[in-house]
Image (cartoon, rainbow, N blue to C red; front, side):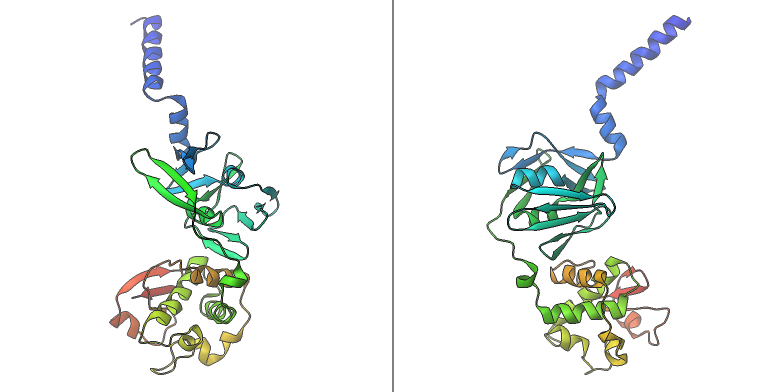
Length: 281
């Protein structure tokens, strides 16, 4: 085969490849995400798409906010934080965090906020909730449909019970102050799941200081429950009070490396290990 014929053969193969896989699709695949059309109140957002990354749907913060309501957006490069101000609410979003703040409330998003090609992308459900939008997935067209919700978002002072937040943030700090955010939230989940269970007291304070069947939470006995919680422990408490569960249904946890009893591991079904704690149903 001559060099000219060989070159033409290779060129034809390359052209065939790009005919089968358009440049934009190839670039999208290479970058690790799939573009998903967004429909807002039935109208397609022509200027932007959602991105499917690691099975999580992300939406562009600026584009969705600007298309929803009149707003002003500022960005702090030092903290990598965007602040979106509307007439009635303020949303704070930080790259790398798994939550967003909305008028003092905290919404968990499973995936981290990402910077994609210079734009912040947020997991769809917490941002839609912040913007008072309902989310529906259209499997047929592989698109996201956002519609104005029939409910109204209330601020943190109206939503969180101060007494519940006080005690939940303190037990989280005392039990999991050195753990990752998910470990902190999971401890909060255990407390709240007990509050809902008829076998335990029906308040957070009552669950923490429940000594009916022995000491349930060591910090309530040693006094470390009264230590001031970190900001992240407060955030974890708020996320738990919002109803987010890291491992749904957990009722017990302990650190097997320092525990003086293995009753939990012998008598309860294992759920998950998060950081230094093992969680059980």
